[in-house]
Length: 123
Image 1 (tube, rainbow, N blue to C red):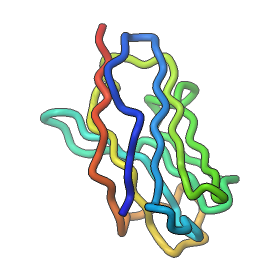
Image 2 (cartoon, rainbow, N blue to C red):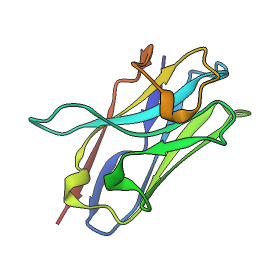
Image 3 (cartoon, rainbow, N blue to C red):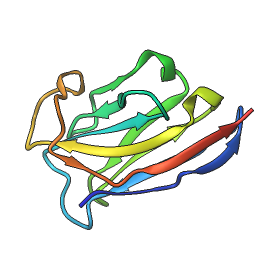
């Protein structure tokens, strides 16, 4: 079970940090990603990190603003979101694919999903 935390309401230009834990279980070797879904839109992949943390992939709209990272010792994956914009408003989901040794760019449909956490950016 993946559990997200850290969502909330923030003004445009602000920052939030999302965290995903795996109920204390090891996250290795799994690709882990953050996806989001805004009202009336399809779910999109936002950022992915491979199991060693040396390969990442981002959707173009968040490059330079969002950073995905992982701490395998703590079995957590985080998404630091800076310079948030109103279009970042969505439910954010943590998802995992594996076991997999693939680079982040090759993440396919995840095996596991969290319940999601709401991020709302006010303009």
